[in-house]
Image 1 (cartoon, rainbow, N blue to C red):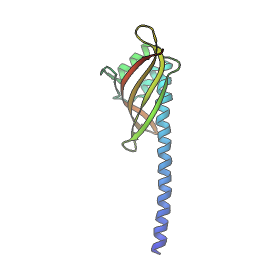
Image 2 (image 1 turned 90 degrees about the vertical axis):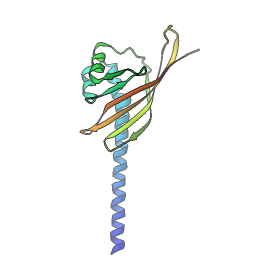
Image 3 (image 1 turned 45 degrees about the horizontal axis):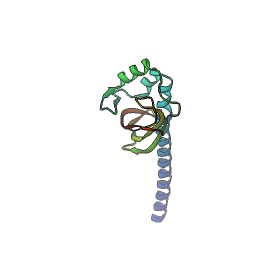
Length: 155
């Protein structure tokens, strides 16, 4: 009898572990999509209203120069500024770290071509880390930090 109960518990536990792994995989995919596709699309389309809905209240952006921008300022900036970025911009997610069931940190780098301050072609790169919170089944950014901005000349 004890063996049967133990075996049943193992089987139930393995199904629970599989379900948790599937949930985590779905969360990883949703976070990557939010970072790589949704966020970029909002800026490309100058969708300030969409950005306002996407970012959590209390969102903070720390820029590469150490500036701190609140959600309202970022939304207002987007409303006033059309996408000036390159068409070849790509964001690569390096990793997603879950700090709880509803909080995750995603970090990676953005890459594109552009021009330096003298108009010479360069390869632009930067790194960012972003904290997202899951609410109502959706992952929304609450914090972003940008660093390591570079513009390496293309010879």
